[in-house]
Length: 316
Ligand code: NDP
Image (tube, rainbow, N blue to C red):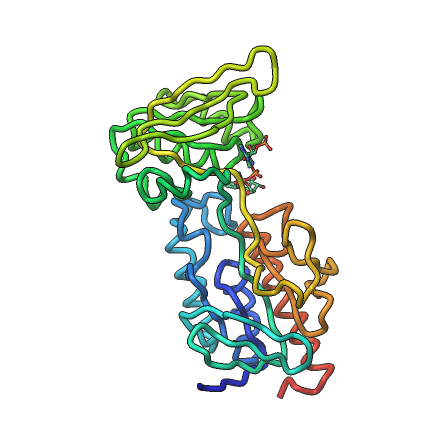
């Protein structure tokens, strides 16, 4: 078992983690960044990012994250392609164990573990996982060229996924449980204008069917009302886009979280209830969840950590 010592351990590698890495390394703190299971985070699963300042013509998610990583490394951040398996925040310096059993002793920890796609919780989702069920259109859309697919959800993510899929699939249904889309006006308009997207409002999915893979979804319209009707929707692919769950399970019992698992921070700082532990990005943000707001909190977390180290005389 190897033991590594660092002043700043950054757990997670989305825009929050890499931005924290850029700031901490420029402050000469030699941060260690554990990239986790999905290096670069959720943005590596998206296509074009049009709303990150500085990219006038948009940028591919993978490209932007690769640039952020290189920027952090350029100033001395040490990026490790493994995950942290457990943490002990009961005393300082903090002890963290990675998935190989190696120990990292850290004076401060910045948690930026992000969030993961949510599923409906239907047994059929598990049954057909990889056989027609997906939570990432960019990853799996290619398999559905000229086929029929459905996207569940009515937010910006669902619209983005539906638009992407509409360039590949013959037909895209959006399964929306309310009578309206929650998405922003611009996304809503784009979806409504796309000819091969059809929005099924007031619909809930109760199951999937198919022999060797998804061949259709069982839907209920107007559930719980006198107009309730059940019907089958023949599709080849079923994409989930119903929000996210914060990736914070390894911190349970170690720091304060809300009922959904989002880490509580003392805004405008990134302080958690444990001195020396900070949280940035989607793992602590149930409201904005944008790449740019995550990057902003990553910057704040690095500055919070730097000031803590200075106050405790461990910045040298
Ligand atoms: P949201 O929480 O905004 O939307 C989730 C959608 O899924 C809602 O339509 C919700 O329905 C629906 N939903 C939730 N649970 C269920 C369920 N059990 N069954 C059926 N439907 C369900 O999540 P998003 O991931 O879309 O967006 C998160 C944040 O990221 C937002 O702030 C969004 O603006 C932002 N974003 C911005 C993008 C951009 O600007 N390019 C791209 C992607 C995301 P209901 O409305 O009924 O609650």
